[in-house]
Image (cartoon, rainbow, N blue to C red; front, side):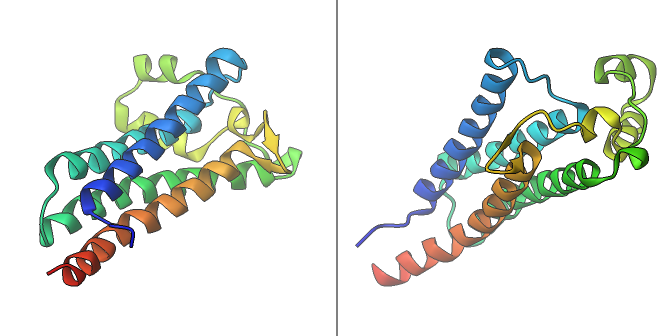
Length: 170
């Protein structure tokens, strides 16, 4: 029987986040796919989820502590899913309804307070509506959305599986 320890499940969640980030960096640096501002925010959400998966793996909490790490990782994944869903929606708009392209994220951060930049970026612009890569007919933000949804469910399943394991072996 496979053992579902919370530590192992969290470590696998962290590895999945690390793989996702490494793949994004590969696409950026070796396939020359420059990330739009929404892509960068999705990376931030992936880092957020990954940090709590890692903390859960290192700490290996009991009972209620498992839910703290799981919910925090799930919140990061949900935020990423929300951003990715908005990104997919922008890409589905007819060309005449796509917002105009905006300045780069670095320029915006130098010009405005962070909260205004976040609001502006989450609205999206023409840079985010352009489909630069697709596999099996699904754009990169579509795949990212699927990954975030799976990650959210996985994060919330961890404490349940760990509890079931604890009940079986006690």
